[in-house]
Amino acid sequence: MNQFTDKRIDHKDLAVEAHGLVKVFGDNRAVDGVDLNVRAGSIYGVLGPNGAGKTTTIRMLATLLKADAGSAKIFGYDVAKDPQIVRQLIGVTGQYASVDESLSATENLVIFSRLLGLSRAESKRKAKELLEEFGLTEAAKRPLKHFSGGMRRRLDLAASLIAQPPLIFLDEPTTGLDPRTRNQMWDTIRRLVKEGSTVLLTTQYLQEADELADRIAVIDHGRVVAEGTVNDLKESVGTSSLHLSIQNEQSLSNARLIVERVLNVQSAVTAEGGKITAPMADADRVTDLLITLREAGIKLEELSVQKPTLDEVFLSITGQNAASHTPVKKEELA
Image 1 (cartoon, rainbow, N blue to C red):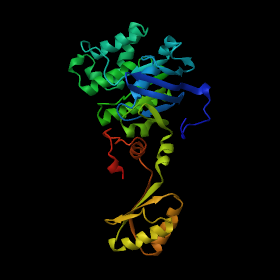
Image 2 (cartoon, helix red, strand yellow):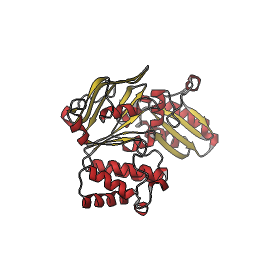
Image 3 (tube, rainbow, N blue to C red):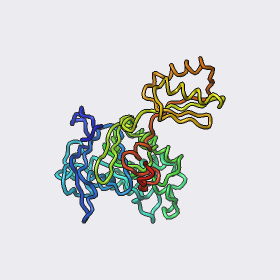
Image 4 (cartoon, one colour):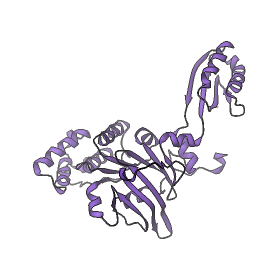
C-alpha cells in the first residue's frame, strides 16, 4: 500500500477489494500488482495516462478478463471463483457504444431489459425513463446509424443502468460528450450513489475526478502510484499558493518585501505585471499579511489562496501531461 491508503478500512464495507492484480500480454506487463479498496456507496476514480492499465484492471474486476496473478472480490465474492454471482452485482459500460445500429434507441433498451428479466411492459417503461433522463426522447425511434457519437455514448450509458446494479463500472463514461451532457451525466452518477449504488470510474478528465470522486487511485505503468482523497493527493504535491493583484504597480516591490517577510518565504515569490504569487503553507497568516499591507498603504485589486490542481498532481506523479496524455520531456520539468 502507498502513503495515502486509508488503513482504517473495514473489509465488510468494501464493494471492491483487489490485491496484487497482474495481467501480462506477451512482453507487456499491462497490470503489475494493482491493489484497490473501494468502499460501498462511494464514487471511486481511477486516473492514469493512456496505456497505464486502467481498462485492463476494470475488465479483470468485471470478470471479462482473467488475472494472471492476484485476487479480487466484489462485495465479498471472489471474481475467479464466483463469476456468475459477481456478474449479477455489477454493471459495465465500456469506452465505445455496445448497442445495435440497426435498431432504434427504444428497441435497444427494450431488448437489454428483456435479457435482464424484465417483463415487456417493464422494459418499455424503463426504456422511456432512461431515454428521458439522457435527453434522447426525440430520437427514440431513430435508427442508431443516424446518431451522433455523443448520442450513442448516452444510449450505451443508459443501457448499462437498466438494472441499476449495486456496483457500476464506468470506463471513461463521458468521452465524446459535450460539456452540457457531461454535466448531466455527472448528476446521474451522483443520483445513482445517493440511491445506493457504488461507482468505479476511469476518466481522462481531471475535472471529472475532482467533481465526483470520493477517493482516487492514480495508475501508471500498471501500478497504483498514489491513492487517496482529492485533497490528500493535492497536498502531496505541495503547499497552496497565494495570489495578489496590486492596484498601484509602483507599490509592487514594497508589497513583495512585505509578503516575503510576513509569510517567511523568499526565493519562491514571483512579482510581475502587478501580481504577486507566493507559496502559502499557513493560511492563518493571510490576516497578518492584509493588516501589514493596509498599514503600508498598499491597496489590493484581488486576493486568492489556491490549492494545487489535480492537473499538477497528475503531472507530478506520472510525469505525463494530464490534458493530452503525452510524455513530458525531462527538460520541461527542470
